Image (cartoon, rainbow, N blue to C red):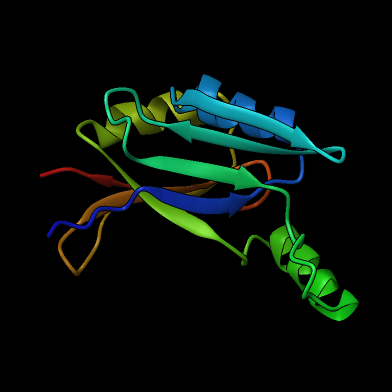
Length: 136
């Protein structure tokens, strides 16, 4: 038996801004763009990896959430503390330079971490933390 990561979910609060970031800045393919009741779900993923995707979903839409829980999620997204994902590249410094030139919010410049990886961090338009690690 094998198990893989097929989809991961991140919230977005502006579908067009999310597309501009993930498609235009990171170079991800748009695999699905679904609208329902005035909301949009976007599925994106890296070229050449059709089995791995990120689903960008409207935040706090679970009908089981209370109004207080929705408020907390909205506040956490605004502070950039709600969600995130780790990505990897074979050229961290080159990707960092490209993203920094595009005026994306930098959280951390490329850094050699004491636990053995080199990474950097950005925020996407919804405030999600995007960490990018150097493949070794």
